[in-house]
Amino acid sequence: MKIESEMIAYANDTVIITSGNDWKEVYRKANTDMAKIKRWLENHKLTLNGTKTKCMPYKINKIKDPEDSQFLNLKIHTCGKYEPGCGCEEIEMKEHIKYLGITIDEKMKWTEHIKQTAARLRQTIHTLLNIRSIVTQDTMRKIYHALVHSIIEYGIITWGNAYQKNLRPLEIIQKMILRIAFWKPRYYPSNMLFATTKIPDVRQAYMKN
Image 1: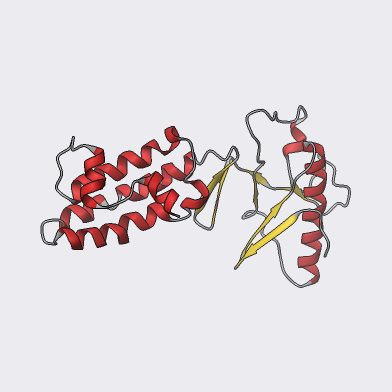
Image 2: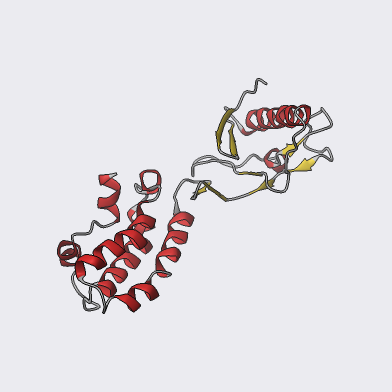
């Protein structure tokens, strides 16, 4: 099977990346390739799950959506015409998609991924509060790396260079967790916090990776 798009597969997750000089070209390539993929699957006694298939247009601030919104509606064509107005199954359009644990947004600003990561970090606070009085600081450091820093570092090479303002929620929750875990006052200086605990902040973790 030959397609114009780039195909990336990992285990049972497959991504199709289509590019072009304008939206109409992207639309044509993507729809044609999806039809080819569907036929290939059917020829090999496999099915394409339309409800689990999603699409997301990548764009930067200077790129405008097409004037005709029909060219944003990707479909799984079975009619052979690849026309926007046909009755073939439409693929749901998303503003952000989670792939292999990383939430990618259409403008590549990583705000949704950082928001979800911060929420996961908040869930560790209760555990740290319960155990901080019965472990040494050295043991707490190991627990922090296992429960907290592993979440921060996951995929950080991808999203860690986000704008400082976008990383801010993650930096705030990390400092809160460190103060709780290591019995530091609420307004304990940030620079001393990272120095005494010997733990890198988010930006340092990115640079290290």
